[in-house]
Image 1 (cartoon, rainbow, N blue to C red):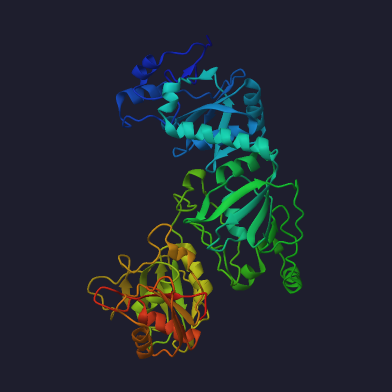
Image 2 (tube, rainbow, N blue to C red; image 1 turned 90 degrees about the vertical axis):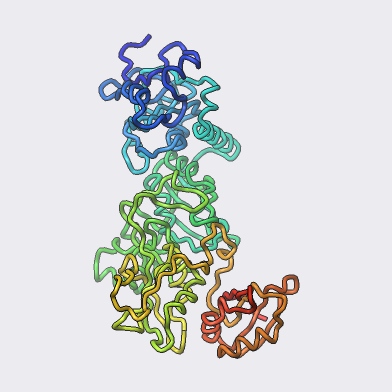
Length: 547
Protein backbone atom coordinates (compact mmCIF):
# COMPACT_ATOMS: atom_id res chain seq x y z
CA UNK A 1 0.00 0.00 0.00
CA UNK A 2 1.19 3.52 -0.70
CA UNK A 3 1.49 6.13 1.99
CA UNK A 4 -0.01 9.59 1.79
CA UNK A 5 -3.04 9.02 -0.42
CA UNK A 6 -3.16 12.69 -1.22
CA UNK A 7 -5.31 12.24 -4.33
CA UNK A 8 -7.72 9.75 -2.80
CA UNK A 9 -11.24 10.09 -4.14
CA UNK A 10 -13.15 7.84 -1.80
CA UNK A 11 -12.97 4.54 -3.63
CA UNK A 12 -12.55 5.59 -7.27
CA UNK A 13 -8.78 5.14 -7.21
CA UNK A 14 -7.07 2.11 -5.78
CA UNK A 15 -3.48 1.85 -4.62
CA UNK A 16 -3.33 -1.92 -4.93
CA UNK A 17 -6.53 -3.91 -4.82
CA UNK A 18 -9.83 -3.28 -6.57
CA UNK A 19 -12.93 -3.00 -4.45
CA UNK A 20 -16.11 -4.72 -5.46
CA UNK A 21 -18.71 -2.74 -7.35
CA UNK A 22 -21.31 -3.04 -4.59
CA UNK A 23 -18.89 -1.61 -2.04
CA UNK A 24 -17.95 1.23 -4.37
CA UNK A 25 -21.52 2.24 -5.06
CA UNK A 26 -22.60 1.99 -1.44
CA UNK A 27 -19.72 4.22 -0.40
CA UNK A 28 -20.30 7.04 -2.87
CA UNK A 29 -23.90 6.87 -3.99
CA UNK A 30 -22.56 7.53 -7.49
CA UNK A 31 -20.73 5.95 -10.38
CA UNK A 32 -17.05 5.91 -11.19
CA UNK A 33 -15.36 6.84 -14.42
CA UNK A 34 -17.07 10.09 -15.21
CA UNK A 35 -18.19 13.59 -14.46
CA UNK A 36 -18.92 14.30 -10.86
CA UNK A 37 -21.74 12.20 -10.15
CA UNK A 38 -24.52 14.12 -8.94
CA UNK A 39 -26.72 13.82 -6.28
CA UNK A 40 -27.55 17.49 -5.92
CA UNK A 41 -24.57 19.71 -5.03
CA UNK A 42 -25.53 19.88 -1.35
CA UNK A 43 -26.07 16.14 -0.94
CA UNK A 44 -24.23 15.00 2.21
CA UNK A 45 -22.61 11.92 0.66
CA UNK A 46 -21.41 13.92 -2.29
CA UNK A 47 -19.85 16.56 -0.05
CA UNK A 48 -18.14 13.98 2.14
CA UNK A 49 -16.75 12.24 -0.93
CA UNK A 50 -15.49 15.48 -2.41
CA UNK A 51 -13.69 16.36 0.84
CA UNK A 52 -11.55 13.28 0.40
CA UNK A 53 -10.01 14.75 -2.74
CA UNK A 54 -6.78 16.47 -1.82
CA UNK A 55 -4.45 18.32 -4.15
CA UNK A 56 -1.02 16.91 -5.02
CA UNK A 57 0.63 20.26 -4.49
CA UNK A 58 3.92 19.27 -2.90
CA UNK A 59 4.71 15.71 -3.85
CA UNK A 60 4.30 14.84 -7.51
CA UNK A 61 4.75 11.17 -6.62
CA UNK A 62 6.59 8.26 -8.18
CA UNK A 63 5.83 7.27 -11.78
CA UNK A 64 2.37 5.79 -12.23
CA UNK A 65 0.18 5.16 -15.22
CA UNK A 66 -2.51 7.26 -13.49
CA UNK A 67 -2.08 11.00 -14.05
CA UNK A 68 -3.57 13.66 -11.79
CA UNK A 69 -4.69 16.90 -13.51
CA UNK A 70 -5.50 19.93 -11.34
CA UNK A 71 -7.14 23.33 -11.87
CA UNK A 72 -9.49 22.16 -14.63
CA UNK A 73 -12.40 24.45 -15.62
CA UNK A 74 -15.79 23.52 -14.17
CA UNK A 75 -17.41 22.86 -17.54
CA UNK A 76 -14.67 20.61 -18.96
CA UNK A 77 -15.71 17.28 -20.50
CA UNK A 78 -14.21 13.79 -20.33
CA UNK A 79 -13.32 14.10 -24.02
CA UNK A 80 -11.17 17.16 -23.38
CA UNK A 81 -9.29 15.38 -20.60
CA UNK A 82 -8.76 12.37 -22.88
CA UNK A 83 -7.43 14.66 -25.64
CA UNK A 84 -4.55 15.69 -23.38
CA UNK A 85 -3.38 12.10 -23.17
CA UNK A 86 -3.97 10.86 -26.73
CA UNK A 87 -0.67 12.06 -28.24
CA UNK A 88 1.31 10.08 -25.66
CA UNK A 89 -0.31 6.66 -26.00
CA UNK A 90 -3.46 4.68 -25.33
CA UNK A 91 -5.84 6.13 -22.74
CA UNK A 92 -7.59 3.37 -20.78
CA UNK A 93 -9.75 5.29 -18.32
CA UNK A 94 -10.81 8.79 -17.28
CA UNK A 95 -12.41 10.31 -14.19
CA UNK A 96 -13.50 13.96 -13.87
CA UNK A 97 -14.23 15.53 -10.49
CA UNK A 98 -15.76 18.85 -11.49
CA UNK A 99 -16.63 19.88 -7.96
CA UNK A 100 -12.93 19.89 -7.03
CA UNK A 101 -11.59 21.00 -10.43
CA UNK A 102 -9.59 17.82 -10.80
CA UNK A 103 -9.37 14.91 -13.20
CA UNK A 104 -7.56 11.59 -13.44
CA UNK A 105 -6.33 9.96 -16.62
CA UNK A 106 -5.19 6.35 -16.78
CA UNK A 107 -2.70 5.48 -19.53
CA UNK A 108 -1.98 1.98 -20.80
CA UNK A 109 1.48 1.92 -19.18
CA UNK A 110 3.91 4.00 -17.12
CA UNK A 111 6.06 4.82 -20.16
CA UNK A 112 3.20 6.72 -21.83
CA UNK A 113 2.33 8.46 -18.56
CA UNK A 114 5.96 9.45 -17.93
CA UNK A 115 6.26 10.90 -21.44
CA UNK A 116 3.12 12.96 -20.85
CA UNK A 117 4.19 14.27 -17.44
CA UNK A 118 7.67 15.13 -18.73
CA UNK A 119 6.21 16.96 -21.71
CA UNK A 120 3.85 19.08 -19.63
CA UNK A 121 6.61 19.84 -17.13
CA UNK A 122 8.28 21.89 -19.88
CA UNK A 123 5.12 23.03 -21.64
CA UNK A 124 2.05 24.23 -19.74
CA UNK A 125 -1.08 22.24 -20.52
CA UNK A 126 -4.24 24.24 -21.20
CA UNK A 127 -7.94 23.45 -21.12
CA UNK A 128 -10.37 26.11 -22.31
CA UNK A 129 -7.71 28.78 -21.99
CA UNK A 130 -6.84 27.88 -18.39
CA UNK A 131 -3.47 26.49 -17.33
CA UNK A 132 -3.81 23.04 -15.78
CA UNK A 133 -1.22 21.07 -13.82
CA UNK A 134 -0.20 17.55 -14.81
CA UNK A 135 1.59 15.15 -12.46
CA UNK A 136 1.67 11.53 -11.40
CA UNK A 137 -1.08 10.30 -9.12
CA UNK A 138 -0.24 8.44 -5.91
CA UNK A 139 -2.49 5.65 -7.17
CA UNK A 140 -1.60 2.89 -9.58
CA UNK A 141 -4.92 2.49 -11.41
CA UNK A 142 -8.41 3.85 -11.83
CA UNK A 143 -11.38 1.72 -10.94
CA UNK A 144 -12.26 0.04 -14.25
CA UNK A 145 -15.14 -2.21 -13.27
CA UNK A 146 -17.14 -2.71 -16.49
CA UNK A 147 -20.45 -2.10 -14.77
CA UNK A 148 -19.41 1.37 -13.73
CA UNK A 149 -17.72 2.16 -17.03
CA UNK A 150 -20.98 1.53 -18.83
CA UNK A 151 -22.82 3.66 -16.28
CA UNK A 152 -21.19 6.82 -17.66
CA UNK A 153 -21.82 7.03 -21.41
CA UNK A 154 -19.92 10.30 -21.88
CA UNK A 155 -16.72 8.83 -20.46
CA UNK A 156 -17.08 5.70 -22.56
CA UNK A 157 -17.78 7.75 -25.67
CA UNK A 158 -14.65 9.81 -25.05
CA UNK A 159 -12.52 6.68 -24.64
CA UNK A 160 -13.99 5.05 -27.75
CA UNK A 161 -13.44 8.19 -29.80
CA UNK A 162 -9.83 8.29 -28.60
CA UNK A 163 -9.28 4.69 -29.69
CA UNK A 164 -10.87 5.40 -33.06
CA UNK A 165 -8.44 8.28 -33.56
CA UNK A 166 -5.49 6.06 -32.70
CA UNK A 167 -6.70 3.42 -35.16
CA UNK A 168 -7.18 6.03 -37.86
CA UNK A 169 -3.71 7.45 -37.29
CA UNK A 170 -2.22 3.97 -37.55
CA UNK A 171 -3.70 3.58 -41.04
CA UNK A 172 -3.19 7.13 -42.34
CA UNK A 173 0.33 7.77 -41.15
CA UNK A 174 1.84 9.52 -38.16
CA UNK A 175 0.94 12.95 -36.78
CA UNK A 176 2.61 16.08 -38.04
CA UNK A 177 2.82 19.71 -36.94
CA UNK A 178 0.99 20.80 -40.12
CA UNK A 179 -2.71 20.05 -40.59
CA UNK A 180 -4.56 20.05 -43.89
CA UNK A 181 -8.08 21.44 -43.39
CA UNK A 182 -10.88 21.05 -45.94
CA UNK A 183 -14.14 22.99 -45.48
CA UNK A 184 -17.07 21.01 -46.85
CA UNK A 185 -20.58 22.30 -47.62
CA UNK A 186 -19.35 25.89 -47.44
CA UNK A 187 -22.63 27.81 -47.63
CA UNK A 188 -21.20 30.76 -45.71
CA UNK A 189 -17.74 32.10 -46.52
CA UNK A 190 -14.84 31.04 -44.30
CA UNK A 191 -11.77 33.27 -44.06
CA UNK A 192 -8.24 32.86 -42.79
CA UNK A 193 -9.17 34.84 -39.68
CA UNK A 194 -12.13 32.59 -38.94
CA UNK A 195 -9.79 29.58 -39.06
CA UNK A 196 -7.25 31.36 -36.86
CA UNK A 197 -9.88 32.07 -34.21
CA UNK A 198 -10.97 28.44 -34.16
CA UNK A 199 -7.60 26.69 -34.29
CA UNK A 200 -5.71 29.10 -32.01
CA UNK A 201 -7.86 28.08 -29.06
CA UNK A 202 -6.45 24.57 -29.16
CA UNK A 203 -2.91 25.93 -29.13
CA UNK A 204 -0.60 28.53 -30.63
CA UNK A 205 -0.97 28.78 -34.41
CA UNK A 206 2.29 29.63 -36.18
CA UNK A 207 1.26 29.88 -39.83
CA UNK A 208 -1.79 29.53 -42.08
CA UNK A 209 -1.98 29.22 -45.86
CA UNK A 210 -5.41 29.11 -47.55
CA UNK A 211 -6.17 28.04 -51.13
CA UNK A 212 -8.90 26.57 -53.32
CA UNK A 213 -8.42 23.15 -54.87
CA UNK A 214 -11.01 21.16 -56.83
CA UNK A 215 -13.51 23.96 -56.09
CA UNK A 216 -13.04 23.34 -52.36
CA UNK A 217 -11.71 25.85 -49.83
CA UNK A 218 -8.70 24.38 -48.00
CA UNK A 219 -6.01 25.50 -45.59
CA UNK A 220 -2.68 24.37 -44.17
CA UNK A 221 -2.24 25.22 -40.48
CA UNK A 222 1.07 24.84 -38.64
CA UNK A 223 1.43 24.32 -34.89
CA UNK A 224 4.70 24.40 -32.90
CA UNK A 225 4.53 20.69 -31.98
CA UNK A 226 2.87 17.41 -32.85
CA UNK A 227 0.96 17.26 -29.56
CA UNK A 228 -0.98 20.45 -30.25
CA UNK A 229 -1.65 19.51 -33.87
CA UNK A 230 -2.99 16.13 -32.83
CA UNK A 231 -5.21 17.70 -30.17
CA UNK A 232 -6.60 20.12 -32.78
CA UNK A 233 -7.34 17.27 -35.17
CA UNK A 234 -9.09 15.30 -32.46
CA UNK A 235 -11.07 18.27 -31.19
CA UNK A 236 -12.17 19.90 -34.44
CA UNK A 237 -12.38 17.20 -37.11
CA UNK A 238 -15.98 16.79 -38.25
CA UNK A 239 -17.27 19.91 -36.47
CA UNK A 240 -19.45 22.57 -38.13
CA UNK A 241 -18.39 26.21 -38.09
CA UNK A 242 -21.96 27.36 -38.74
CA UNK A 243 -25.34 25.74 -38.30
CA UNK A 244 -25.40 22.48 -40.30
CA UNK A 245 -22.72 23.66 -42.76
CA UNK A 246 -19.05 24.57 -43.23
CA UNK A 247 -17.84 21.22 -41.90
CA UNK A 248 -14.15 20.85 -41.01
CA UNK A 249 -12.35 17.78 -42.38
CA UNK A 250 -8.84 17.57 -40.98
CA UNK A 251 -5.91 15.32 -41.87
CA UNK A 252 -2.16 15.48 -41.46
CA UNK A 253 -0.26 17.29 -44.20
CA UNK A 254 2.75 15.77 -45.93
CA UNK A 255 4.56 19.07 -45.30
CA UNK A 256 6.44 19.56 -42.04
CA UNK A 257 6.91 23.33 -42.43
CA UNK A 258 5.03 26.09 -44.25
CA UNK A 259 6.94 28.71 -46.25
CA UNK A 260 4.84 31.88 -46.04
CA UNK A 261 5.95 34.82 -48.22
CA UNK A 262 3.12 37.29 -47.60
CA UNK A 263 0.89 38.36 -44.73
CA UNK A 264 -2.49 39.01 -46.33
CA UNK A 265 -5.99 37.54 -46.48
CA UNK A 266 -4.70 34.30 -48.08
CA UNK A 267 -1.66 33.52 -45.95
CA UNK A 268 -0.22 34.59 -42.62
CA UNK A 269 2.97 33.94 -40.66
CA UNK A 270 2.17 34.88 -37.06
CA UNK A 271 5.84 34.51 -36.08
CA UNK A 272 6.89 37.20 -38.58
CA UNK A 273 4.52 40.21 -38.67
CA UNK A 274 6.92 42.16 -40.89
CA UNK A 275 6.30 40.19 -44.07
CA UNK A 276 4.98 42.22 -47.03
CA UNK A 277 1.33 41.95 -48.08
CA UNK A 278 2.18 41.33 -51.73
CA UNK A 279 0.48 44.62 -52.67
CA UNK A 280 3.28 47.03 -53.73
CA UNK A 281 1.20 50.18 -53.12
CA UNK A 282 0.17 49.08 -49.65
CA UNK A 283 3.63 47.84 -48.75
CA UNK A 284 5.17 51.21 -49.64
CA UNK A 285 2.49 52.97 -47.58
CA UNK A 286 3.28 50.70 -44.65
CA UNK A 287 6.97 51.41 -45.02
CA UNK A 288 6.24 55.11 -44.67
CA UNK A 289 3.67 54.71 -41.91
CA UNK A 290 5.58 52.06 -39.98
CA UNK A 291 4.31 49.18 -37.83
CA UNK A 292 3.40 46.82 -40.68
CA UNK A 293 2.64 44.03 -38.25
CA UNK A 294 -0.41 45.87 -36.98
CA UNK A 295 -2.30 45.35 -40.22
CA UNK A 296 -3.91 41.95 -40.65
CA UNK A 297 -4.85 42.60 -44.26
CA UNK A 298 -4.87 45.43 -46.79
CA UNK A 299 -8.66 45.37 -46.76
CA UNK A 300 -8.82 45.73 -43.00
CA UNK A 301 -6.38 48.59 -43.17
CA UNK A 302 -8.14 50.49 -45.93
CA UNK A 303 -11.65 50.04 -44.62
CA UNK A 304 -11.12 50.19 -40.88
CA UNK A 305 -12.41 46.67 -40.36
CA UNK A 306 -11.77 44.38 -37.45
CA UNK A 307 -12.36 40.68 -37.65
CA UNK A 308 -16.02 39.76 -38.09
CA UNK A 309 -15.46 36.94 -35.68
CA UNK A 310 -16.82 37.68 -32.21
CA UNK A 311 -18.80 35.52 -29.79
CA UNK A 312 -20.01 33.38 -32.64
CA UNK A 313 -17.91 32.95 -35.73
CA UNK A 314 -19.27 35.48 -38.19
CA UNK A 315 -18.46 34.83 -41.83
CA UNK A 316 -16.91 37.18 -44.32
CA UNK A 317 -19.02 38.15 -47.29
CA UNK A 318 -19.19 35.85 -50.27
CA UNK A 319 -17.90 37.27 -53.49
CA UNK A 320 -17.31 40.68 -51.92
CA UNK A 321 -14.54 42.39 -50.05
CA UNK A 322 -12.70 39.93 -47.77
CA UNK A 323 -13.57 40.80 -44.18
CA UNK A 324 -10.28 40.03 -42.52
CA UNK A 325 -8.73 41.69 -39.51
CA UNK A 326 -6.75 41.31 -36.37
CA UNK A 327 -7.46 38.26 -34.24
CA UNK A 328 -9.65 39.06 -31.25
CA UNK A 329 -8.11 38.66 -27.83
CA UNK A 330 -9.89 36.70 -25.15
CA UNK A 331 -12.06 34.58 -27.44
CA UNK A 332 -12.13 31.03 -26.12
CA UNK A 333 -13.98 28.43 -28.18
CA UNK A 334 -13.88 24.92 -26.81
CA UNK A 335 -14.54 21.40 -27.92
CA UNK A 336 -17.68 21.23 -25.83
CA UNK A 337 -19.04 24.32 -27.53
CA UNK A 338 -18.85 22.62 -30.93
CA UNK A 339 -21.83 20.83 -32.35
CA UNK A 340 -24.66 20.74 -34.85
CA UNK A 341 -25.47 24.36 -34.18
CA UNK A 342 -21.96 25.39 -35.22
CA UNK A 343 -18.97 26.60 -33.27
CA UNK A 344 -19.99 28.97 -30.51
CA UNK A 345 -18.11 30.69 -27.74
CA UNK A 346 -19.90 30.46 -24.39
CA UNK A 347 -19.47 33.12 -21.75
CA UNK A 348 -18.44 35.84 -24.18
CA UNK A 349 -20.16 39.21 -24.74
CA UNK A 350 -22.91 39.19 -27.33
CA UNK A 351 -21.61 39.84 -30.84
CA UNK A 352 -22.66 42.87 -32.81
CA UNK A 353 -25.64 41.88 -34.95
CA UNK A 354 -26.78 45.42 -35.78
CA UNK A 355 -26.44 46.93 -39.26
CA UNK A 356 -26.50 50.60 -40.20
CA UNK A 357 -28.33 51.10 -43.51
CA UNK A 358 -27.89 54.55 -45.04
CA UNK A 359 -28.78 56.52 -48.20
CA UNK A 360 -32.31 55.07 -48.14
CA UNK A 361 -35.22 56.55 -50.06
CA UNK A 362 -37.12 58.34 -47.29
CA UNK A 363 -40.37 58.30 -49.26
CA UNK A 364 -40.35 54.53 -49.72
CA UNK A 365 -38.62 53.01 -46.71
CA UNK A 366 -40.62 51.36 -43.91
CA UNK A 367 -39.63 48.96 -41.14
CA UNK A 368 -41.62 46.19 -42.87
CA UNK A 369 -39.80 46.77 -46.17
CA UNK A 370 -36.38 46.47 -44.50
CA UNK A 371 -37.56 43.43 -42.54
CA UNK A 372 -38.53 41.71 -45.80
CA UNK A 373 -35.40 42.65 -47.76
CA UNK A 374 -32.84 41.87 -45.05
CA UNK A 375 -34.85 38.80 -44.10
CA UNK A 376 -33.54 37.14 -47.27
CA UNK A 377 -30.13 36.90 -45.55
CA UNK A 378 -31.04 36.35 -41.91
CA UNK A 379 -33.75 36.55 -39.29
CA UNK A 380 -34.38 40.25 -38.60
CA UNK A 381 -35.17 40.90 -34.94
CA UNK A 382 -35.75 44.67 -34.91
CA UNK A 383 -35.76 47.62 -37.30
CA UNK A 384 -35.46 51.31 -36.41
CA UNK A 385 -35.66 54.16 -38.91
CA UNK A 386 -33.87 57.14 -37.34
CA UNK A 387 -36.35 59.85 -36.37
CA UNK A 388 -34.14 62.82 -37.23
CA UNK A 389 -32.48 61.21 -40.27
CA UNK A 390 -35.02 59.04 -42.03
CA UNK A 391 -32.64 57.95 -44.80
CA UNK A 392 -30.80 55.93 -42.12
CA UNK A 393 -31.98 52.81 -40.32
CA UNK A 394 -30.72 50.21 -37.89
CA UNK A 395 -31.44 46.54 -38.65
CA UNK A 396 -30.76 43.95 -35.94
CA UNK A 397 -30.13 40.38 -37.17
CA UNK A 398 -30.19 37.26 -35.01
CA UNK A 399 -26.66 35.99 -35.86
CA UNK A 400 -23.39 37.81 -36.64
CA UNK A 401 -22.74 35.81 -39.81
CA UNK A 402 -26.14 37.00 -41.08
CA UNK A 403 -24.95 40.61 -40.79
CA UNK A 404 -21.97 39.76 -42.96
CA UNK A 405 -24.16 38.06 -45.55
CA UNK A 406 -26.40 41.14 -45.68
CA UNK A 407 -23.39 43.46 -46.05
CA UNK A 408 -21.96 41.27 -48.78
CA UNK A 409 -25.16 41.06 -50.84
CA UNK A 410 -26.93 44.38 -50.20
CA UNK A 411 -24.22 47.02 -49.76
CA UNK A 412 -24.24 49.45 -52.76
CA UNK A 413 -27.37 47.82 -54.21
CA UNK A 414 -29.69 50.26 -55.98
CA UNK A 415 -32.96 50.21 -54.06
CA UNK A 416 -35.88 52.58 -54.71
CA UNK A 417 -33.64 54.65 -57.00
CA UNK A 418 -30.77 55.11 -54.52
CA UNK A 419 -27.58 53.16 -53.91
CA UNK A 420 -27.90 52.07 -50.29
CA UNK A 421 -24.94 51.51 -47.98
CA UNK A 422 -24.88 48.67 -45.46
CA UNK A 423 -22.24 48.54 -42.71
CA UNK A 424 -21.87 47.27 -39.16
CA UNK A 425 -23.32 49.64 -36.58
CA UNK A 426 -21.55 50.67 -33.38
CA UNK A 427 -24.76 49.78 -31.52
CA UNK A 428 -25.03 46.33 -29.94
CA UNK A 429 -28.83 46.27 -30.03
CA UNK A 430 -31.79 48.24 -31.36
CA UNK A 431 -33.60 49.86 -28.45
CA UNK A 432 -37.39 49.81 -28.48
CA UNK A 433 -39.10 53.12 -27.62
CA UNK A 434 -40.12 53.54 -23.99
CA UNK A 435 -43.82 53.34 -23.26
CA UNK A 436 -45.51 56.61 -24.11
CA UNK A 437 -42.51 57.84 -26.12
CA UNK A 438 -43.54 59.08 -29.62
CA UNK A 439 -42.03 56.95 -32.36
CA UNK A 440 -44.36 57.40 -35.36
CA UNK A 441 -44.10 53.69 -36.14
CA UNK A 442 -40.41 53.96 -37.04
CA UNK A 443 -39.29 51.15 -34.68
CA UNK A 444 -40.66 47.62 -34.87
CA UNK A 445 -39.87 44.36 -33.10
CA UNK A 446 -39.98 41.23 -35.28
CA UNK A 447 -38.57 38.71 -32.81
CA UNK A 448 -41.79 36.66 -32.87
CA UNK A 449 -42.46 37.00 -36.59
CA UNK A 450 -43.68 33.83 -38.37
CA UNK A 451 -41.83 34.99 -41.50
CA UNK A 452 -38.28 34.21 -40.33
CA UNK A 453 -36.58 32.01 -42.91
CA UNK A 454 -33.75 30.53 -40.81
CA UNK A 455 -35.24 29.83 -37.39
CA UNK A 456 -35.46 26.07 -38.07
CA UNK A 457 -31.99 24.44 -37.58
CA UNK A 458 -30.63 23.04 -40.83
CA UNK A 459 -33.34 24.80 -42.88
CA UNK A 460 -33.02 24.37 -46.65
CA UNK A 461 -33.14 28.16 -46.87
CA UNK A 462 -29.49 28.16 -45.77
CA UNK A 463 -28.66 26.46 -49.07
CA UNK A 464 -30.57 28.96 -51.22
CA UNK A 465 -28.97 32.28 -50.34
CA UNK A 466 -28.10 34.27 -53.47
CA UNK A 467 -27.31 37.89 -54.28
CA UNK A 468 -30.09 40.10 -55.65
CA UNK A 469 -30.90 39.18 -59.25
CA UNK A 470 -33.53 40.06 -61.84
CA UNK A 471 -35.00 36.56 -61.55
CA UNK A 472 -37.08 35.73 -58.48
CA UNK A 473 -37.88 32.29 -57.10
CA UNK A 474 -41.53 31.91 -56.12
CA UNK A 475 -42.90 29.16 -53.88
CA UNK A 476 -46.06 28.20 -52.00
CA UNK A 477 -48.20 28.80 -55.09
CA UNK A 478 -51.67 27.21 -54.68
CA UNK A 479 -53.01 25.03 -57.55
CA UNK A 480 -55.91 27.44 -58.09
CA UNK A 481 -53.59 30.29 -59.16
CA UNK A 482 -52.35 30.36 -62.75
CA UNK A 483 -49.48 32.12 -64.54
CA UNK A 484 -51.54 35.13 -65.65
CA UNK A 485 -52.74 35.87 -62.13
CA UNK A 486 -49.19 35.88 -60.80
CA UNK A 487 -47.87 38.04 -63.65
CA UNK A 488 -50.75 40.47 -63.15
CA UNK A 489 -49.98 40.75 -59.43
CA UNK A 490 -46.33 41.59 -60.14
CA UNK A 491 -47.26 44.08 -62.84
CA UNK A 492 -49.66 45.75 -60.43
CA UNK A 493 -46.75 46.01 -57.95
CA UNK A 494 -44.84 48.06 -60.54
CA UNK A 495 -42.64 45.35 -62.07
CA UNK A 496 -42.20 44.65 -65.77
CA UNK A 497 -42.43 40.87 -66.25
CA UNK A 498 -40.07 39.56 -68.95
CA UNK A 499 -40.55 35.81 -68.50
CA UNK A 500 -42.30 33.26 -66.28
CA UNK A 501 -41.94 29.50 -65.83
CA UNK A 502 -43.47 26.97 -63.44
CA UNK A 503 -41.16 24.24 -62.18
CA UNK A 504 -41.95 21.15 -64.30
CA UNK A 505 -42.02 18.72 -61.37
CA UNK A 506 -43.48 21.03 -58.74
CA UNK A 507 -46.14 23.55 -59.76
CA UNK A 508 -45.98 25.12 -56.29
CA UNK A 509 -42.77 26.83 -57.42
CA UNK A 510 -41.93 29.11 -60.33
CA UNK A 511 -39.35 31.57 -61.67
CA UNK A 512 -40.30 35.09 -62.73
CA UNK A 513 -37.84 37.31 -64.59
CA UNK A 514 -38.20 41.09 -64.23
CA UNK A 515 -36.72 44.07 -66.06
CA UNK A 516 -33.79 44.73 -63.70
CA UNK A 517 -32.24 43.82 -60.37
CA UNK A 518 -33.64 47.03 -58.86
CA UNK A 519 -37.13 46.05 -60.02
CA UNK A 520 -36.68 42.59 -58.52
CA UNK A 521 -35.64 44.04 -55.14
CA UNK A 522 -38.72 46.27 -55.06
CA UNK A 523 -40.94 43.37 -56.19
CA UNK A 524 -39.56 41.04 -53.53
CA UNK A 525 -40.30 43.63 -50.84
CA UNK A 526 -43.88 44.05 -52.06
CA UNK A 527 -44.71 40.46 -53.03
CA UNK A 528 -43.11 38.32 -50.32
CA UNK A 529 -46.00 37.07 -48.16
CA UNK A 530 -48.50 38.36 -50.76
CA UNK A 531 -51.86 36.63 -50.27
CA UNK A 532 -52.63 34.51 -53.33
CA UNK A 533 -55.64 32.71 -51.90
CA UNK A 534 -57.55 32.40 -48.64
CA UNK A 535 -54.92 30.05 -47.19
CA UNK A 536 -51.76 30.68 -49.26
CA UNK A 537 -49.18 33.43 -49.05
CA UNK A 538 -46.47 33.73 -51.69
CA UNK A 539 -42.83 33.16 -50.72
CA UNK A 540 -40.25 35.11 -52.73
CA UNK A 541 -36.45 34.93 -52.84
CA UNK A 542 -33.67 35.75 -55.30
CA UNK A 543 -32.76 33.02 -57.78
CA UNK A 544 -29.38 31.96 -59.14
CA UNK A 545 -31.09 30.83 -62.37
CA UNK A 546 -32.49 32.71 -65.33
CA UNK A 547 -35.33 31.74 -67.64
